[in-house]
Image (cartoon, rainbow, N blue to C red; front, side, top):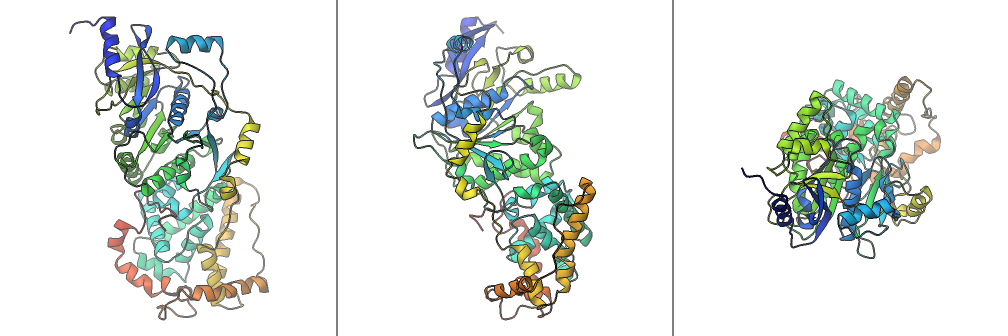
Length: 564
């Protein structure tokens, strides 16, 4: 094959990146060692929902790249979601100050630069950080994602799905961890043994393992991430009054201590969007672009059900106008089934210090189209702020591979001042809606309250062996794990007022009981009415067919509050 001249290579890039519609400007091509600002490299907005990958070794500029892309998406009126793992992305709310070095760089790639601020909303999981608290209910989170956090095996995950199915069918709202504890404790108690047997695939031993894992989560302080008010993912798709897309920045200051929890929560946000958004087809620009940083955390030791759900979500959510960009170190971090759906590639430098690194380099090179570059050499010699790029053009074909000097962000590449973040959070329209946690009546109150009502003023056996014993077990396990006295309050003696509380609720609850509940007045299942009585018998008979199409649950087993 004839060797191309520099002019021919420049012409190839210019032709390949000449696009008709609106674009994200990524930078200028570097050809034969020289930057050519007359050969801009860009990404069509209409192709952002074909998803993408931003990869590269630590310190090569991946975070700055997604920072720069987020700015331009916002300016184009596209909402953006990103996870702020290192605390650097809060700088989007602060205009950058130019320097002589910066001006030389931007002039060299043909970038007209000026410092700007962008509309940013700060979120924090469960209030763990400086932002609007983001919480999910247990029932919305679903059994597959919860199994991921609890690190359950496949058998235990299937058993947890049965527990969710039981709760769904019997109107037992799983809002927080104590609700799920109460349901499992009921199923493993004397009062619930018949229902446990009717569920079939759930053994008492497996239920006990799940119960212990739940208590461990609570002992580690994870209960604050689950509860109400549940975050409405539609909040991620807002625009500012001036038409710019709101950049939602989720602060993850303690990622290293709970990586599985945080990565799975990000997937819950995406799954909830997937289930609720209508089909949109091909759009001129996406409705939302979702950046998943540290993407390898999603896939490490993931179950087959979890991987299948991710693959399905990525494949189908593009038709709903959402683009997903995975940000990680090498393409090998992403399963082949997912990687094959990522049409837009921004590959920063890779290192080849070890034999394993060399294998990863060869694997990365093999995923790019043929080009005029020696990609093995190019990827190991690219500088900070440079990347090898190929994207999908407006006709659905890959653009030429181009080593690119990337544009500089126009907001601060680093954290904003704490005072600015605090004032932004305090002035947010979301704070009154999500700021304070609430504890509404749910499965825990229904089971414990009806057990008390069933036995009148005296403490019932179900109550004595149910929630009280769960709390005692929780205190014991917390002390074993943390090596200190439990922070949980000891159970107080039931007062007359406490014993009468379920009676005050009884009239409202009794309205849901059918004439024939299939149980006895002294039995907890009977007290719960048809939901836990005769209705269970028919539920059990149809369980085999119903589990494949769980009511109102999506590919991850999630159930949005808008679908419940």
